[in-house]
Length: 274
Image (cartoon, rainbow, N blue to C red):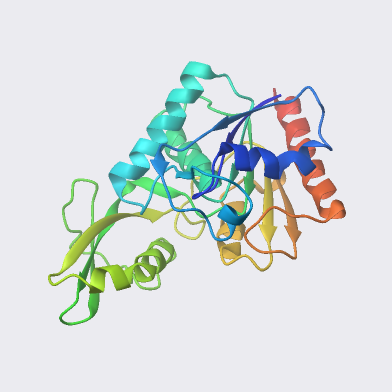
């Protein structure tokens, strides 16, 4: 088994490698784990700089189309030049990049299988790179945030009935923009940014059809993302482990063993399919 491993935003490959050590202790010693750093420098994730030295990276910043495309291209290039890889393993943003790649590539090039199984830990939801985007505009004078749903060419979708403040495809990216509103509010003029919409099992019929393992923290602010990604996968091939922690890898010995077991079950299904 050979895995491509993608770290979380504001960390790096060495950090993910250290975080995975307890899980890997339960897995076969001949399994190989290759780690890929993001190309964008980032501020450290909360509390991470007190434990691990930098530099810290991300695969993209805000989910603007060009940045997500660059992350997509980076991973795809590594897969094609340094593969094949049997599986992909991602934490947080790395998991979202992995599922973004799997779902979008299956639509654009269904004959090329990038990975045979996947592991998604504390994931956020993947971005749909083919269904358009939201142009978000914040007007500091009016203190108002507005949005226009556009197609991939940037044309407004006139007959759209999308409630962008509550729609499952946009709520996560709206939350991210809201978190950055103090920066936008300091501007004297209205500022705009294009952001991608997310996949969601309610609005999309496409599914990840390879065996998968999912790790979800019950106190994770993105736990609903993790559960939604499970819904984007084939039920009979999805193995889910929950723990009582937050946005982190589980620490208890019993849960770590369960995670390793879920990964092994996904691998066994992969081997049975091939």
